[in-house]
Length: 478
Image (cartoon, rainbow, N blue to C red; front, top):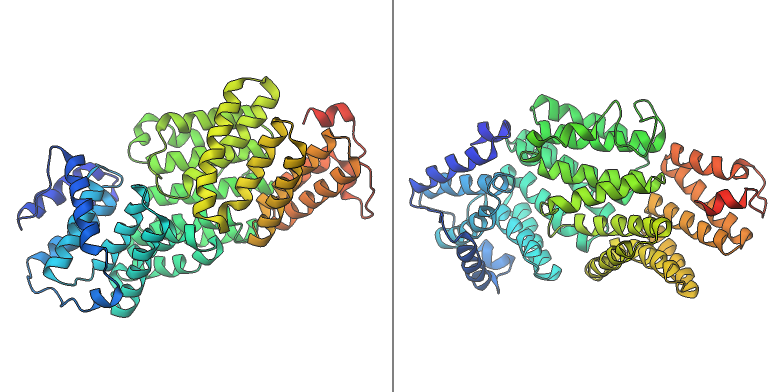
């Protein structure tokens, strides 16, 4: 199974695993999978509803020797089936939890409980319930000292569930440590996936200045090469290319709005042959293309990427933070397109994205408030509710500053500045755009700060002038 998975042959790997499990009497249904999944979900929830860490610690170690490799295999299949035969992933997880509760504690039980918590998010249950099982899994892992599943548990908790309940920056440190543990104790697949989680959390939280972030990715990329993990290596290269475009460094695209360059080419993962085996990667790259397009003002390119991502269904990341990040940037892009084309369809999309992001902000106010308020501000501008717009711009900037999300604080200041320009308040506009310029530079986004400097040459002056010296017509076209 591991050999097939390492070659991205996910469906054959799952088939081999299922055949092996039949040998010990664990069978998965081939028909009515959804019905069986819902039944086992209800059964597992009833089984686990009142369980706490102390209850699970009292479970005796498993004695049925034939079930040990079966449960170990089921934990492996839970991950592999997420990329091949996704419909089986929840069912395998629920069966694994049930078997652990029936036969006793195994080294894979913390990972099964962690995945169970993550799946509750995917099925639409509360963040509180999902986080409860993530905390249980983490505590079990630490107290029982099972080294072999550190990477799996950490990926599922700090990479999926805890980003809703903890500041994104707090989710960073455990992931590289878990990667090294995975490589050391033989869980290479989950160890390398911890690196992918680390990369996206670091970017979206602005957890490191861009140059430092790129150095960290280069340091970890060697493990993807050493263990021949194509998907992880490509995922890391996506972020290297994005950072290069923002920094204007070696390997950047001549047009920074394009996710193309010496490090990564979006077309390379958009081909039909890779769509199946790298769907997670494909959806991730389309989101990053939306982000680059929006930040650098190529709203048409951002919108095309947004529509491409919508066409895929974007289901690979359901239940994660990803759909909320997508709603944020797709909504901003729709409003930018509406400003140019005045099509009602764009307003409908923006409204839909705003509603989705509102749900995300309710579930994770600590990480999504600044995004929600910025999209709300832009929507208010489109509706000509200027008082509300100014209030929401200010709230977005404040929440981004409190969360230390430099690039999106800079974006909020930039958009607030453009709003003031349209209102002919040049003094207030200058202050906001100058703040955005400084924040982009602090983040390491030299190419982005330089693009602002071209539009507003006096940003580079040591003394602050309180008037924006720019052709008004050119400014309004921005």
